[in-house]
Image 1 (spheres, one colour):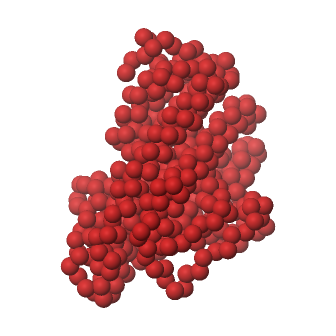
Image 2 (cartoon, one colour):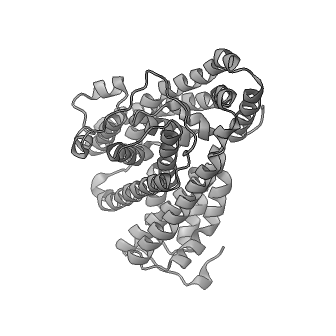
Image 3 (cartoon, rainbow, N blue to C red):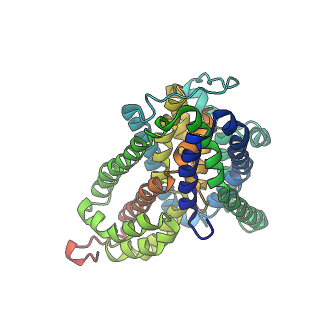
Length: 407
């Protein structure tokens, strides 16, 4: 597996896990292979809290001079958070309608107990930690996210005196990115160790719903782009959706093939400036920020996969728990950029936030590359739509004619 891409290695690990699981006894798989998967899960758990906290602090503090960029930054962040929340809701809706995990139920460990959903008001209030250190120790993701955002914003407000703190978190975040990268290198073996015992016990039927998961994610991405983004650019940006999608198409192709919002950023900037008439001032601020905090496609994927995992394990997510998925997926998206295997890390966070078995990550890890192509394309499209919206509201948009668009 020397020079293979990580996504290819994970797919190979999944395939090998399936093949081995078909031929080895369940007892052998549980004794010798399952600990490999357990090791991977523990490594991910080790990374989650410090990774999320440090990356969120850095992301929230990178907005810049709040007084100078406050208006434009507020519009950008609000748009990203709203569309991300809508994306999670679309994912949950499709998960409820299509039932990708229906007909396949795996028993949960006896120690697992489903959480009783609190009232919606309590869910919202519980986002605010009474003791941030306690939230960090106990891994309360919503409270960690809330506190980290506040720290990041406060660093920006304080200014130069807080630069040492910002530098510390910037360096610490880089360390966590490196550790996460090392952990993700273990992912192929972890997926192998997680999926082989499942196949050994339940057979190939366990993989059948994956086709429905792929269909649900791609359908959700199409709906989100065709309805949410089209409506936004038409109503607020006064731009034809056809003009918009034709103009952003070159960046979409790169996003689809590279699965990297950051790697697509130069093409995205070029497309929105040359093809969509967005000013450089707006594009240079909105798009890099979007590559950091806008994860509509990834969040939609969280919604679908959370329902899928719940259905596979025969568990019902109440409306309160589904609201928790929306909140976690929306807020966690801010800290997801730049993280190798961000989709799987975020999925682990979302599953943990509603008490779902983390072993469910292995069921979708093998098709993560296929799903990543759709969600990255949607992320980049969302970045471009935000640039159009902000530019229009700042009177910095010159809507081009279709004949001036270079594909």
